Length: 162
Length: 77
Image (cartoon, rainbow over all chains, first blue to last red; front, side, top):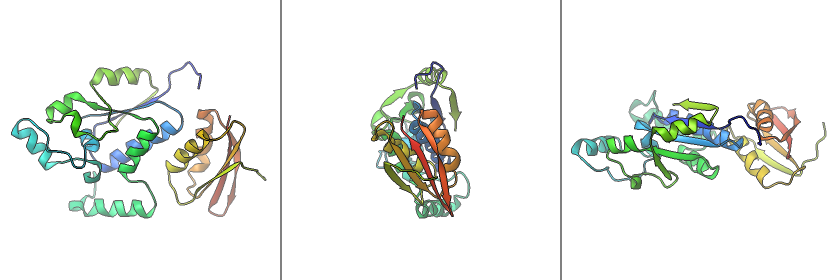
């Protein structure tokens, strides 16, 4: 891969929906397996995807705490963007995925880490939602703003917003 | 087509992106010139493996289909 032209993939994961997160990690892991540098930037609801399952309810004002109490986040708690049906639809989808031996979102995140996918959390959204570095899974090692993302995007050919 | 593989990866029952991710991991442990055989039944691999090989600089050697089973061959560069 000694090509001069820019290569690489960046994905902004704005959504906190299970289905969208699965699609994002599917593309990220495939690109990483193709030898491309991959950067995932988690912002707004996307932060919920990388929150610890056992995470605390954030900090700050009652509004921030309430937001994290209503939506605890964590890969296991995410819901489908459609057909959630009070959780029944999401449970059925997870069962179907397991029957097809498809990896769970948690397994996809672990795989992304093994494949060297860079995972960045948006510090602005973190502040807004009362989250600190301790609230995230250990695979998230970088905390940054949009300039870091844009800088990565300029060096990449494929830039997705999910 | 008769192919002699140095290593075989069984991906039957696995869907995208697993066969490609496992191929990538297996190839890291292989020596240049060695051939990897991947057995899969997700037909996406027929398009995905040549695409993977062309972007990673490895050589796609071809595939064999036997019913639902697809065997693809790639040589590590």
